[in-house]
Image 1 (cartoon, protein in one colour):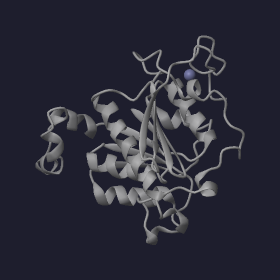
Image 2 (cartoon, helix red, strand yellow):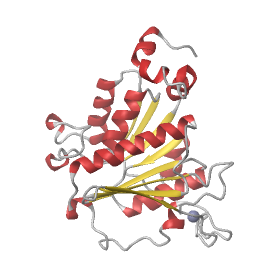
Image 3 (spheres, helix red, strand yellow):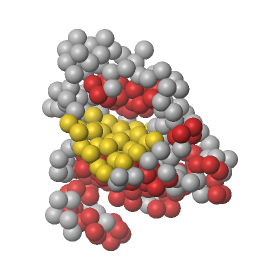
Length: 262
Ligand SMILES: [Zn+2]
């Protein structure tokens, strides 16, 4: 594929980076990324991935834009209140980069649709706001052999991790269940809507998430896989902790009990 004149100008600041260049930009233009959740993390993810020239962005979300979302979910604006988040986010992507193809999945990620949804993408970025979806995304990405970049937020803190133990050549790298073996019972750990979130923290983590997605797509630098990055806005501190595969993991261990999404 050859870059057009418009693309040479649009991506000029990528093209002068030796580590990206024409070849990297062309790779981004044919990449397909599925973003789970068009909310606090999904907003910066979608906006930066679109701006970067990722060719196809899938958006999974079954929610509508609420006025209380606008404090952090910057892919939506006041005119979008009441609209489907997928439609609103798709319109924002189109404004930033009409060259990006958007695939709208106005549905909730479930054990029934996850395999079908993941199939069409090179990489999954999870920006969901609940544990059930986070575990499901982890299991579905591992079983589908796709890399997963997963973010989460609470109050003044955010976490980021990359999981790709299901990807050929990366066996032995941990999954989300290796770090957090048991799903907390519903209500034990509050969600942002109950505990609050400083809006800009979503921007920090979502933007780091977009950066790690682009790095994975291009094979740039060191992968975050095998680590957990924790940001405390009040410190402010970043901590990068090592995370290892757990041989007893129910999904990626030596004797797995989770073999399908059912
Ligand atoms: Zn595991």
